[in-house]
Length: 428
Image (cartoon, rainbow, N blue to C red; front, side, top):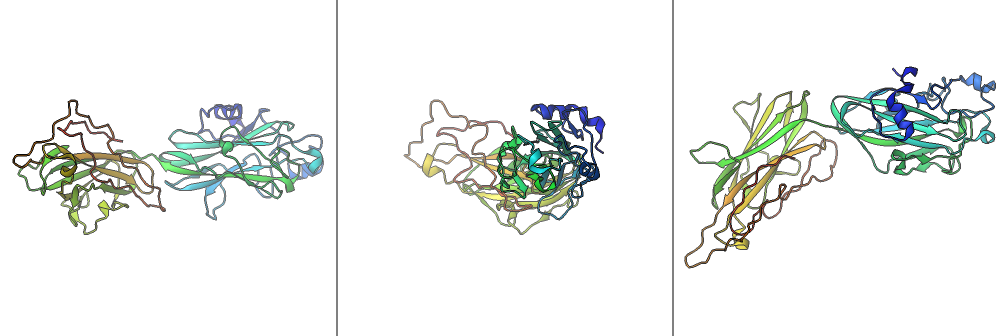
């Protein structure tokens, strides 16, 4: 519950000073005077503040209740009531935050607040609780700065992403409309007839600053990829193997939940390069419910949406295996006598989350040269593959739970002509 003792909290003082929010998880309202007096509507009507301008200090506002708690939030697009102290948030969901702005003086334009400015402070760290603070200031108000916050809570660490272009000013005046994204930087001027910082007193001139933030859970999990020849007596899984055109190879993608919470709707995507041909229906999933493996006739694994392998509790593991045929299309370009590296990536996502982990495994093909053919000469200094060769990028989401990725073009990765220079596996 918000309380006056929190007024002197470090988070609030940092917010009004224009510095980074040091302790954003303290639920606090406050002001630059160290604790402003509140008034009832009747007290205002009976002249309690006729001689001064006061911002957001009515304790029984018939529309928003206690104006001390002027920062509120709810799920974007929902009919849920706005929450004024804290709100439980969901992964991938966007929330509307609003800041109520009210010059409490009853004399309208005769007692206009000057240089009225709104600022939102959104923390950049990752925690199970994060506070968004709103600051309203005016050069001739007493006190001249007031602030409040709302706590976003979840059962796992998350971060907040401000939705660019979402800031808006809602009022009955001509100034209502879009606000600059400076709202989350140095602040933006408000106003009634224009955004000139002038806001007359009384209810009719009040308004709302609104903006949107997206909640992104920071899941903790690992993705590991291995490969082997499908029909070999050697059943060991490797980071890289040698193969020839026409061979059948088998891949293993291992997901492990290393967090303290259940991770729902885990998706695995195989980014199949053109030099390997996925064998339809070869995908098998193994986990605690399917210890002997369950086959799927779906080719979702190599589609843009990926394969949903279900929900996994803390420490749980899911293993996906599948087969592919080596189709070496690189010889025509690089010639025989050179090692062609077929590098294929696997990616893991959680639900509609933006967090992605990936890993790769390599198949090395060394095409033989025909008789009387001169092989390609190795380059004097072979080029080492970069740490993130042809790193695939995720496309924009198309809806809740949608998971998409680009599919690599002609060959996941190749070295220069000559021979393969191994680089250790990287995780992202």
